[in-house]
Length: 77
Image (cartoon, rainbow, N blue to C red; front, side, top):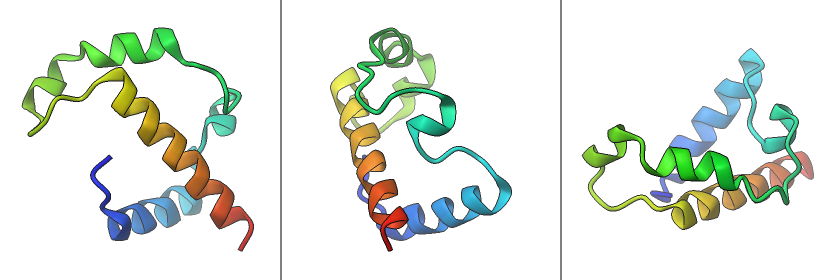
């Protein structure tokens, strides 16, 4: 979401190293799953009141899709 690619690279490597999920398939979801219920719950999370910009379901979905693409690129290297 924030386009902090250096941090993304570091987090991705760390997550992979310790076996944490980095893509929807790791959580047994299909990449095309709309995640409607998950995103609706996440959007009303009180912690999002502290972000410097409004975080919407659409913005979260875009971030998820971008992370899915990032994973595909990493797996093809």
